[in-house]
Length: 547
Image (cartoon, rainbow, N blue to C red; front, side, top):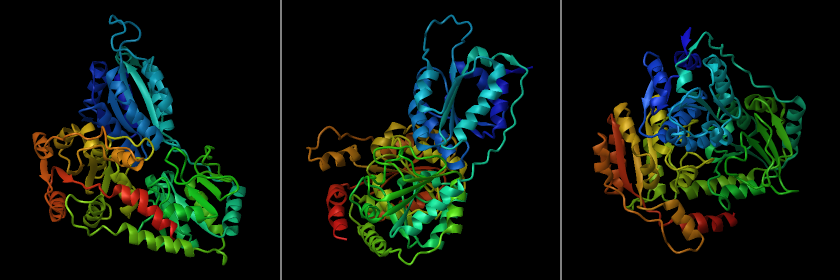
């Protein structure tokens, strides 16, 4: 006989779990005691939201569900945002929450919520364990569903009386499941559509961010010479230094890339679905779209592809590449113009040395200093647009941004998870001052875990993204300004090293020093967003229209 909490930990070990991120409560104490002698490391965080973001990022980077832990009630409700973050962003994650005894309790309804039902709309799987004997099957099913395409969030509630039970069950063997091959007729139809088109364009989304798919897409591009672009969460699937790369769909409309998309008569859409903000809007009797993904397209008013190629993406692309013949009538001359204009436009302010610094300059400095495999994690703010447009990724999963839930507060926890997974890589979190303060307490977690991470705070004393939107709509500036703490002293109070940028030249010198010096570094960098409206709302449209 095995104690149920011990069996639960055995089931997690059987799934290859390395870390559990979270904050235990009294309802988790049996599980916590079982973890004590486990090879699984508990990463104690300072807020459940930070734990959830770390678990989701672990899933995003490894393809294996990251695991987070909370108590019942308020601890569980604090995981709702990370659950939505993982679910919309297709990041495999498992949440473990505690609960009061379900068979006999003398505390009435104190702290009790129906957490299972609460999690139902934002997870792929949610279940309460009512018997220790059910633990192996529930854990195995949660991991299977969280990992299966499209990946997402799963949740298990373990009541404290069930955790203390005895069980004679054993864990289930973990079997690898191969993804199905695409339908041969669908592949041939895709080849036919591509060969018949005049201006095909390859669009890469987040679902293509798999190593085999990266290799297959690179072979397709090299074979066909069809230009490609990507969504924000598809950045880095292919090296963006290539001549055939046209850019990233960072804005909703009117950018150079949107003009290229509008000119295309066929979009080869690989790994995209409507959860991520659409990079284009389909219209009836206009361009055709081939949807290549692990699952068929979810039909929406703005997305209704004429052809679905469903199955393993890498195999789908490989088969299309083998069958396709190059066509003399393909005309990519307009795409070449777009490429040249984009290169000229995004580099315009790269050498601008004004202070406070322009976001374009900051992006360029980070790209020049960080090695090819260095990782940048973004919080959510207007700077995300500048990174999506101007920061070129050379390798996959080197710019972690969220364009599905697009939540604030995830940038710092994501950086901690990235550093735990890749201790030999340089990791930088770029946060707005607003987003940073939403989970800034995780600086203590980073210091305690002795992680070498750099946090760059873009400081404008305001919710800059909404101010930009406010200005674009012609409204007066109102309700979005605040005062920040002294970020240098704030960092030092946690045991981190604080730095304040005083000039343009100071930024690169400070960043280089931080990358070469172990420990947690916080860089307070004043940012100048005064050109956002003129460039992103006005000039881009005018210049792109002139192409």
